[in-house]
Length: 133
Image (tube, rainbow, N blue to C red; front, top):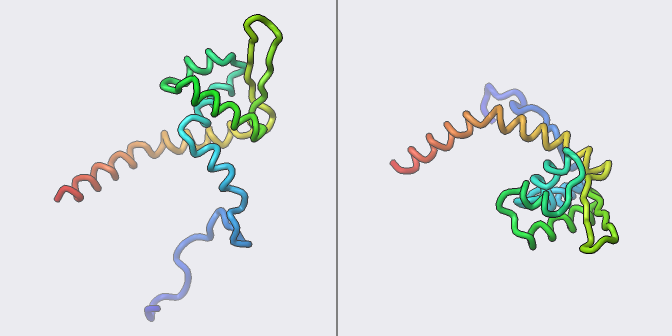
């Protein structure tokens, strides 16, 4: 430690895991860290959707991947799947209360991303330029 150093210069962390486990965040990141789950949650935030509506709204997702994604979100209690006994069967998806509570966090992340997009782009460009040198 230098003579002039008198204390910690970084702020206290906002999030900590005092007991050194993953604070339960690993399960959440496993679900929300995949490519499609957040996009499905965002789409369902505006209301009930049928499978094909979801598939059209989430550009680029295959039928199989959408099926896997909604099953995982249902298993985690973030969405509810309702099947109607029609021919062919009609299936609707909607967010649960827990799923809706997640939309506030996703909005915060989207707002942060929008606000910092120019700075991140500039940082990437500077890094790429320095990396080429």
